[in-house]
Length: 524
Image (cartoon, rainbow, N blue to C red; front, side, top):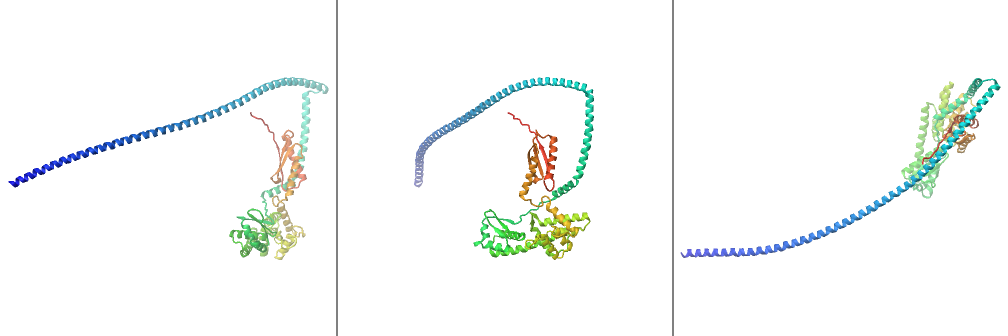
């Protein structure tokens, strides 16, 4: 029993302490809750105060930003108003200026209108005077006609018929005489006109072949190369000149040097070699010698190919290799600015055409024409006239006596012994004298143009004259108050006739007379 009693007491004590602990814990938790609540209230109050302060700051900032924006907008509007005011002022100024101009024009129109009315009145008065004078003149004419009828015992109508009859007879006689004169003139000028037509045809198909005769120009990519071409103490340029026989001219001309020599083949070798050296960039004595030797070999091949190609084109065979080489050398020879190879080809074609027309052997004529200037390929190295040199070469390399004589006689160094000599000489003259074949001397060319213009302006009524198209056409301006349309046509014939009588020229010259009337007025 005692044990049970003790256990009950222990349980009661345990629960008592438990209740006390719970109560104490409640008191502690309550105190802690109050403390936490108080702290939370303080924090919340602080946060609210901070939020109010931040809101107040943001509000002030926003107010300031709005004020600044309003100020900027105000300034922008004020500037815009100022610009608009200036535009309005400018527009107003322009309107005032236009108004002043319109007022001036209005005053001018008023004065012109009054002047026009005055002129109309004067014209009306003059018309009345003229009408009265016309009526008076008609009356006088009628009186004179009546007197003439009484004196001549013939009516005015019969007089008109008789006059017309006489005029018709005279006109018929003059027409017959004019027709006869025209026919006679046409017969007289038939040969001349035929020659002019032939020359005109040659001129249309002719091509000017002009080359430099003594110099060649080599372009440089940079002026720095001039020093390398000269070399140290002039060694490179001296080597180049001694190996090619060509003078190298290096001056202040930008981007170019000049090669000068009378031998066209040497000059061509020098030009090709110089271009190779410039392109390669290695310019020294051993390299110069090697390039020049190689260029000479290559050019010799080109020369032979040019000769062989020419013979192949013309169908000529059986010619010595030496003559073929001389024909190729003509490619680099010029005479009066005309390429001699092209000239020789043209002479061969002309001689061939004429031989066919005359029933001669065209192959012999063609061969003589092609070789007629062969001496020009060697006249630099052999002394004497090129016709004699060419004849000696042709004889040396086995050409026939006909060909040798045609070459020697084409400049009358020898007497022609066959028709082919005449053909070669005639074809050479045609090829050399046709328009555009050779360069005219500049002074003679200017003199010819000046003479043409002087002939035109020597006629009465000519205001200005211009020679154009290298003297192939004359443009003549006449004074319209002095020259009528019919007289302009007659003037063109007179000018052409005087040019034909006084000047010598190849081909024909077109004379154009221009009569122009210009009416000028001003719109205000």
